[in-house]
Image (cartoon, rainbow, N blue to C red; front, side):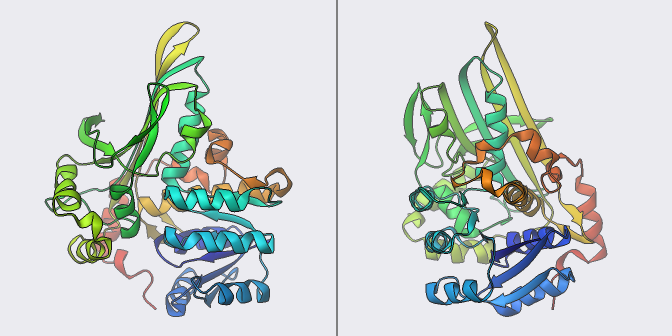
Length: 385
């Protein structure tokens, strides 16, 4: 039985805490600055292996006091990205395994520095992108003798867009603003490259439907460093419905809202709806030489909302939480095998998909499941205290 502290009772923290507790192998302490929110999640799960706590993780002394009073083997931060560096520092001090969901490049650099020489595992960038997309891409890249072009594309989209932006807030508004506004990194012509967000617009057609993709920050994770000098071109882009990028360019650049992110967050959360009827698209394309022949291989997947433990969970929740839990599970099963900084691409795709949590990526659900929940009126009432 492993004891895990989950920080943040939001969209992802609520599911990953339930997944771990329901397995029977984890005692989970779910902590949030809003104790009522944490208790609502715990009550909704109705599991014996999870407890709620009110802790302000931004208060270093309060967080350390909680960790001393409630010892754990690992801490999983599902907090906003900017809260993670002090949590990582505390994990190092208390010799805890550390996991987070950040897509922020600077935060990951800070965690990397903290992880140097640690006797426990520090695995930042868990989840979907970065996270699973890096694992899938790395696996396919291993199939080639010489790699030319690698494209990583991920989209978390509403199934039925109903506004001009053709978008819904399926995850953290802080994260969306961060990936649309920060510099992007990749490899171009064999050299490390810095790219502008919302540029590099292209179209992709998957199963007969047209999407657009453009540069966004952080989704590549550490893959560019891992494959430096071994690939010609390596890029990560976010997928959206056509027309979204143009609207965001006006908002972020022409109206200069990238310089006023707090105000932008208020606008998005007031005007852009949330939904549990989403779909997550994962697309990897690798071209290069195999036995002297020019070849292409792809990994393509569409993940829809899933019913887990009697509740409906959005696809972005399922893909992110299951990705985190799979990595946590693999590390804590063999803790002596993992120490210091752990990159997502150190995990094999097969072991993730075979894992009891990672198998969520292999399930072939459809839009009908979430539609049925919505028709009954149950989808929006799952965590009402």
